[in-house]
Image (cartoon, rainbow, N blue to C red; front, side, top):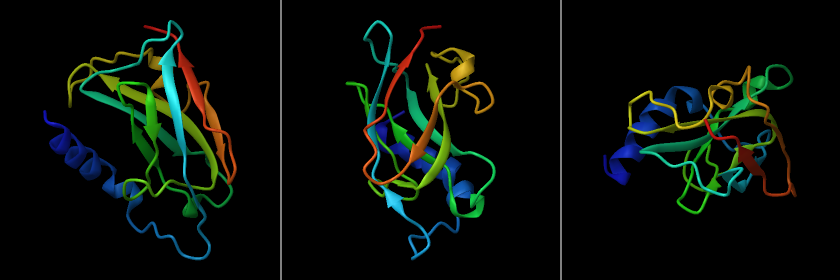
Length: 140
């Protein structure tokens, strides 16, 4: 699947979660760029390789929306909520990873614990001035 087609598929999949998201006066968008690698220094790559910030329940949940970023070949990512480069709404998130050998396939290339908010060891508090996150994953 080509890169533009992959992005169209992701936008279509994420649209229900981001519908209604605005950057009005009550919503603070924070740019978030970071890196993700396996412990041996290699980068999780597949036809689908995405970092997802899923809002933690509680607080001003209605203002927070799911955000995602594509893992690049060098391990870097830039998060988006509605459009590329818009960042993440300030708040607390569970960080999960969707890395699959094939687009729309379900052969994960990362351990299962990283694919669900209930089991991921990663949590991020998004706020202005935060350090770029660096995630180190175990290999499956």
